[in-house]
Length: 278
Image 1 (cartoon, rainbow, N blue to C red):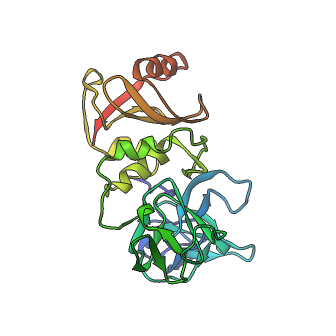
Image 2 (image 1 turned 120 degrees about the vertical axis):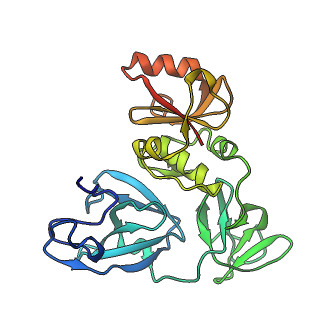
């Protein structure tokens, strides 16, 4: 079986050393670990700003980089879900302290001092990792001295109680193919970030999620938290009658009746392929 290049770092000219003997490449190299230092970093299929957006990495994520081109493109693999692609090298920096907390609301600000009237230094999306050095009754403070509202961050070991409620926080977020933040998100990105916030491992793409997550249940037995799959699409059941999903019909994350969505998508030529209970 051939390896999926979206999850395995190899090209005809270069490949990760651990793939020696599994793929053909002109050279095999050890990767160098970097950290995402921008709030959101686009990971593209090719080294060009007009190339397809496959996914996004969030601040604090680790990336194993195998090549940095003269044009400033870093080719590497995300540690969080194994996705391979090209990021702007400007979005990466040396590996710093391990994140201790993550943003647990759709977005938050880091202020330069304990004063919310000051212009913020950074805006971070849900899931971004922060190395917090101390806390007060109001703020969590990182090594730069930036102050984040304490209620907006959670220790890494603290799972969200209900991943569906996490997904519902993104309602009205614009639809963006490959997106994974409050600025724009797609259907599988919504599922991934919601499950990751509840400390559940989740692959990136819809077909990967359908293969890896949960167990099959009948369409007639849908309950809160079930994932409904079509070819190239996934939605999250809020209850027996409604779903929440990022979709190109509404061009945003929307809540709609399950039966109506199934009928609409079927009219467009796609049947439900499975329902998975995670």
